[in-house]
Length: 122
Length: 122
Image (cartoon, rainbow over all chains, first blue to last red; front, top):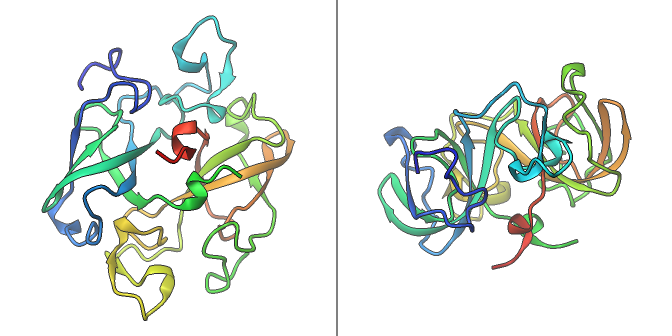
């Protein structure tokens, strides 16, 4: 995915499968992650607009402006992206995943386990 | 919370209520967030060990080493913290929250809405 306007707003809205390419020096980092696991990918949304503090949710001008911290807009002062994805295959330092809504070559900052407290409706 | 050894491993394991203090220039960022909302706090875990790629889950030496990317250990090359919290009160650029498992003065990188896709068991 290279066109920011065509990118899905969320990963379950049509994102193609994608490869995460980790740097060789972190090869031990994903040990224990298995095909079928869900993980959280933390990215740096390097093409976001960092001067924005208010947005129309989902880019819909008919919706009232809202502070970016109450949204998932990529545009925000420190453009961290969070993406809950499913691991489809693992090839050394490359992980193929489903439901990643990110532009090609978006830098990966971190990977994390999904916790029940992320998931459970409380 | 100032003692890293005494800090709860997860926010629902005894974290005291905490104040998020935002910088004045991002005052518009939380507009629209309301008391009772849940948000994701993204932090930079500045006292983490960044040289670690494998850990014993939950610091329990009886558990096998595992790559950090399959855990929620704070110790990892880029120590981003994710904290799902409930907003208890809002006072300008300060938000009081429940369930934040972080040491005092941990830098806040970002705040985000919780999405149903973060939450829903799929």
